[in-house]
Length: 185
Ligand code: HEM
Ligand code: HEM
Image 1: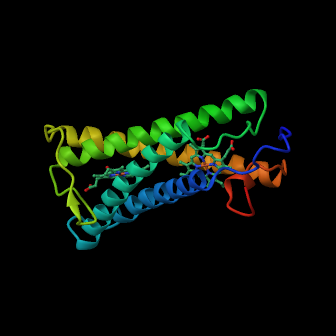
Image 2: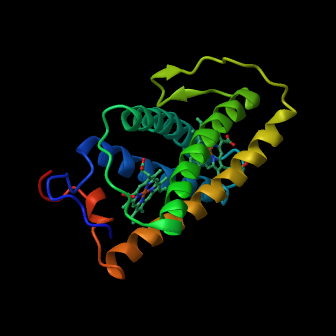
């Protein structure tokens, strides 16, 4: 771990942490919900409810990811890199890839639902307007891409989590702690 300037903050700010952990929780929940409903027979109420929940949580994820990017690009706290050289490059590439994949997955989720032409609402509170209409034949194209991107995100986020644990338990540095809300600053 690179030595930090003693005057510089040792943790990310609260909003960055909150948005990071909400993103992680939602991504895991979204992936898990699809694995569960795929075990259920088509047309069952529980399957439909899980899909509606997935879509509402997907809309929430869209808001959180956009808020996170806006915060990061504006006032969000920046910390010195946790790695040097090639490891730094790999970590940065993985973080950018995760943002790009999340944004792509959000777009795919929306266009998938529009192509399905089925109810599209946020926890029953309001309907999402149809901004683009697609031919129904595109349903399987968007669905296939959405599923593949889901696997790529889950694998990359898994590796990312393993690396965070390697920093913590093997390298014994501050990398994971600075994303955890203990103590001050
Ligand atoms: C689906 C799950 C996850 C996603 C999509 C995700 C995404 C990200 C992204 C994009 C960053 C870069 C932040 C930035 O610089 O803007 C980041 C940072 C970080 N994540 Fe995750 N993350 C996930 C799960 C986890 C888990 C489970 C852990 C811990 C076990 C973790 C630990 C960290 C740490 C410690 C950082 C800060 C790294 C640094 O300071 O260089 N993340 N995460
Ligand atoms: C990282 C976030 C996400 C992951 C990991 C994820 C994962 C999945 C998976 C694995 C499926 C099943 C695909 C299939 O069998 O064809 C699915 C279906 C779906 N997802 Fe997502 N998804 C995410 C975000 C979103 C978002 C943001 C939306 C937009 C609201 C969305 C909307 C949908 C829709 C409409 C379906 C089809 C549901 C149905 O068949 O009725 N997803 N998702």
